[in-house]
Each structure stands twice: as structure tokens, then as C-alpha cells.
Length: 520
Image 1 (cartoon, rainbow, N blue to C red):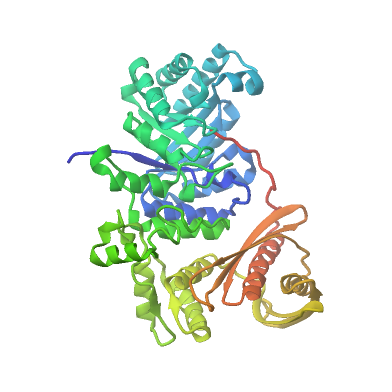
Image 2 (tube, helix red, strand yellow; image 1 turned 60 degrees about the horizontal axis):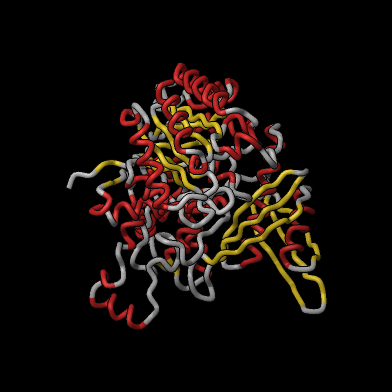
């Protein structure tokens, strides 16, 4: 059956990163961009260059790396924003400028304080300027789902006439419902001249839990681009979940008559990468990539699964990159078996990354009897994101008792190969470990958040810890893994301290704690 293609526009690095606590470093953004390219998304919205110098540099670095997808940057309808996007994205062979302006009555009156005609003039001027700088221009009328249909059609018509090649219709505050959104798209298809000559796009937020459903309704009514994020991360309740909307189109292709070019076998590894970097782990019951998505405990379900998997599974776990086998390797497993297992899990590592991950695997295998897929994934995430010194953790000693403060001793190895140790007390082993790290490194940090996630199963499962700390008024996030929770937390804090020290050495300023944000 011939089907139409849906372009997947991933905005994890722009709208997704705006979720509280989800900010990423430049290196982390490059890792995510490379993973999105491997996933084979069509467009990567790499950021909002005018938000801050850091955002500009990140978008430029991603564009210059030119991993393959179209690289897009967001701009308000003003010349400075548009020029910054052009400067940031033009290093990519294929790039896009995305301009937006609010159109709903509530935004016109309370935010912009602009008349309808002024907004149309602003949109037309911005699209024309962007079109002079790039062949590929997208326009978004912010809060489109709460805009009067007649006026929305006027704005869209003007943007198309000015040269927009993609028109995106956002449900900015997650207000619409599928039937209503379907009618909105069909109205535009009927009342906007030239609309068949552009790509209609949809961008939904999840405030009422309907971002995926609304996006699918729009696609059914003529949209041919869906804007989404990995794990559905984003402001407030998040965005349309990429893995959910892609698998809905794949699983029900005969109904929608639509397909994507996404390599679905990379959905789970990409989800794990983003959750590891951001520290926001999907709920166990999250569709497609949650720990329970392909788990069956009820007896009647297990019986049906043994007879035929399709009795209770509408898609195969292998199709989204989740391996059927779980218990895989032990301390006697060799490098080739480890490399093969890594590939089966959907990860592509170079020789250096493989060797580093294998060394960590052997260390872990000496500490626990069975190594599960989740353990290997945690090793890869930790090794892939590992940053060089100046300090590495050699040893950690913890003493605790119910009637006294915890005492922690850490021993670090510096860049010169010398060992340095310090002991400290605290109202818990983590607090004591942080104080000991401060004593050795001379870097004072304040622990703001400590999150623990189990990487596999069993009493000897690895713990993945994500910490958020403050230093000199700026927030930093670090990750660490170990079968020992305190050690995992210590490694996460040390990762942050190393990053702070490297920034000092390189003369870089601290990242902005609250850069300008934009939403559509």
C-alpha cells in the first residue's frame, strides 16, 4: 500500500531542553544531535540562538557538525533573532530558519499588545527577511489552537505568500482536543490559498494528556510534519512524544496511510541517552520505552504470550530497540561478546569508546554475578559521557551509625598522578562525601537534588544517580553509576566538580542559570 511520508521534526534540543532541570551542556547537545541523526529524524531544531551566547554556540556547533538532518533554529519576528539563526545554522548543508509570532486574542491583548494588522505585518516582514537568508523557512502562529479561525487563515495566507515553505500550527498550551484540531486543519486546507504548495506541520503540548492524539488527528487531516521530543520532554507537561507518535504511525499504518523514515530500532537507545543526560527518566508505564512497556505479570497474559506474542503485544520490543533476552554476560565474557551485545542493544561505539566501556564492564562483572542489559546500557551512558579529569575517584570509604553523623573518606587521583585524600562528616553519607570532595578539590558546591534510578534488577543492580548542584550562582548537573549508591552519587558530584575546574582552566564563564525562553 502506498503511503504518504510524515516528516519528523525533533525539538528535544530546543523545546525539550526548556523543561525545568533539562538544560544540557554543549557536549551533551552534540551527543543528542548525533543520536537523533542516527535515529534518522528529518529535522533537528537545535535551539533558540538569540536566547544566550551558549545557545548560539550550541546551535552553531551542531550545524557545523552537519550530521545529516536539516538543522533548524528558532527566531522571534525581529531582525536580530533572524540574523542570529542564520549565522548559527548556515554551516549545515541543509538548514532552516523558524520564525514565530503569537496570534490568539489573549496573546494579542495581554502579551504583545498589538493589533491584528500589526501581527500580520510582523509575520510577513520576518518571513521575507528569513527567505532572503535561507531557502527553507518555517512559520508558526503561536497559540494557533486558540486563535479565531478566520484570522488564523489570514495570517497563514500572508506567511505563505511571503515565502514560508512550512507552516506549523501549534497547540501551544495543550488546549485543543482531537476532533476540534481535525476541524481546524481541514478549515485551513479549505480556506488558505496556496496551502497545498507548503508543508503543513503540527506542534502539540501535553497539558491535557492529548499531545500525541492531537498530532495524529492533525496528520489525518493533512499535516505532513510532526514536531515532537524524545520521551515527550518539554515545558510544563511536555510535548508530543516522538517514540509514541512514530510507533502509532508504524503500528497503524494501514489506518493512517502514513509512514516515517525513523529507524525505530534506535528509539529505546535514544530514549535512554536523553534520560541519562537530563536526569528525567520515563515512568515505568511509559508507552514504548517504559520499563513495563513489554512486561507481562498477570497469569492469563503470560499464558497468552507463551502461545503467541500478538495476543498481548501489538508491536515487538525488538522493533523499538529493546532486546528480548536480558541476562547476557558475566565476568568471563570477552571483548567480542561485549561488542556484539552493545550492537544488539542499538549502540554504535568507536574503538576508544568500546575499550573504555569494556573496562568498566569487567570491573562491574567482578562485583556482581550477573550483568543485565540495563547494566550495560548504564555503563555505555556513563562511559560515553565521561569527561576527563583533573580528578578521578580511586576509593571511597563510608562509615555510618544510627546515633552519629556519617563519616566518608575519599581518595582522588589528580592529573599529576598524585593521590589526595580527605575525610568529612555529614548528616548522611552523601553529604559527607560532598564535603570530602570539596576538601580535596577546593570547589564548594551545594547539593540541590539527588535522583536515583535502578539500571537493572536484583539486589545488586546498578544505581544511576543524577545530581543537581549550585556553584557561584549557577546550576550544574552530573551523572554517576555504581552498584553502590553512595559511590554513584560521589561520581556524579565529581563529574560536576571536574567540569567546573575545566571551565576555570579554559577561561570560560559559568553557564547562564535562566536563559531567555521561547515557546510555540
